[in-house]
Length: 259
Image: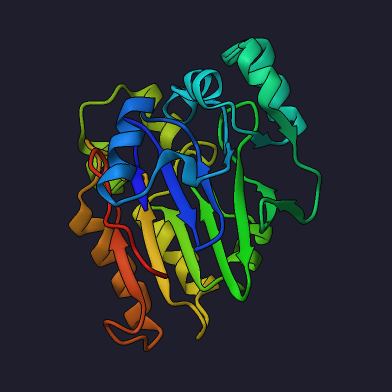
């Protein structure tokens, strides 16, 4: 379930009958509880939090989560250090800190592996998550694709990938030139076209779900992102409906989806 996806805030829930994780903490504690409760999930149903990077739309409420929930917060040592020294020097976060090692980690019944992606934060990572035979991958806020990201995506049956902007909308829009360059020059965000190119490279017959995340409110539309990804699938002979393709909403939650 995507609780929110975009610069307004980012937070995702993934779980099975036994365990659950939260990815990022960009929505308020109160709203997170409300959204989970609407799907008959108690906030106690997730046991840990994974953090992708230290931009505020991903960690805005993390200190509150730590203070009130006291659940373990997993991130790389570099990212934890950056949050402790600059973006979120909270004693509550320090108490919840858990460092991920390179390679696969055991996190509350899941196997979790981080991979570094280019983005202009202290450090930004995506996550590959395995539960039983299911392989899930999320990569949001990624300036350009890496071979490691593509390789891991080519093994997953569910991929959440950024499709942030339409190039024509960005260049013709009201953003200052410096911000436009920050977005599109390799360490900002992934365009619809770049996302489509990545899909052509990582698609494989075992891919079942493809969710487009972190769509820009000003430089994209859900239809543009969806159509661009659908055309990439169609160009490889993938029939509509063969892959569950969705553009995740920005300010509202997605349905709770069974993968």
